[in-house]
Length: 82
Image 1 (tube, rainbow, N blue to C red):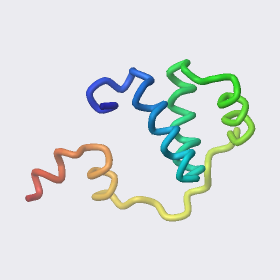
Image 2 (image 1 turned 30 degrees about the horizontal axis):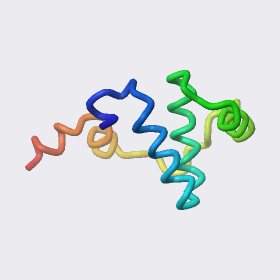
Image 3 (image 1 turned 45 degrees about the vertical axis):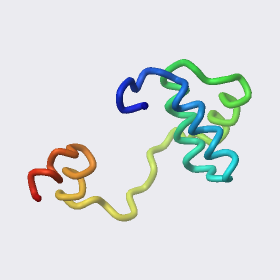
Image 4 (image 1 turned 180 degrees about the horizontal axis):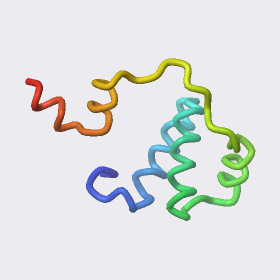
C-alpha cells in the first residue's frame, strides 16, 4: 500500500504498531522516522524518535556492492538480469 501512495500515513502507522508489538525496535524507529517526515507523528512517538535519533550519520560497516545498490534502488534491474 505504501508503494502505491507513499504519502499516506495509515500504512506506516499500521507497520509501526506491528513492529512495536513484535518488539522490533529498529524497524519501529524507521517507521517513526517516516511518520516524522510526513508530519504525522504523535507527541509520544515524537519524543521517542527524537531521543533515539542521532545527529551523526551511522558508520558504514559493510558497504553495498555496485550490484546490490542497483538492486536496492532500481528493482527493474533484477528483471533485466533474468
